[in-house]
Amino acid sequence: MTGPIFTSSKLAGTPVAVGWPLLPVPDENGRMQWPDGPASIRQSIEVILRTAPGELLMREQFGAGLEQMLDRPNDVATRNAIRQAVSTAITRYESRVQLERVAVAETDDPRRVDVTISYRIRPSGTVDTLRAAVDVGGA
Image (cartoon, rainbow, N blue to C red; front, side):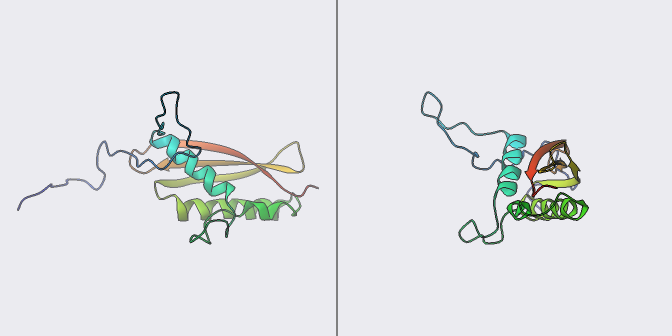
């Protein structure tokens, strides 16, 4: 038998796949700067959170749909709906991570909630956290 033989299901030193940069802008030499693996994942999650379903051609279901929360009151039901929408969208569209926790908390502003996303990068096992503010309808 020829070819590679793997002794474990996790490949040591497996690089994290890198996607297209969120805002691709050439540097002063005209070259594109590519994000490293963790930065690429953060940018991908940001795209998922900022995109509304139906906004992308040929990917009608892509996105978290957080804009639908703008007219909803800042209550427990809305915060649970945000948590569920974020969890579902990241699990569905960002396969490089395993969600550890999504927490949605009130802020001093009744028209905004704070979303904290903790995730594990699958190839490396590194845990990272991302925070985002989401606007809601208010009190």
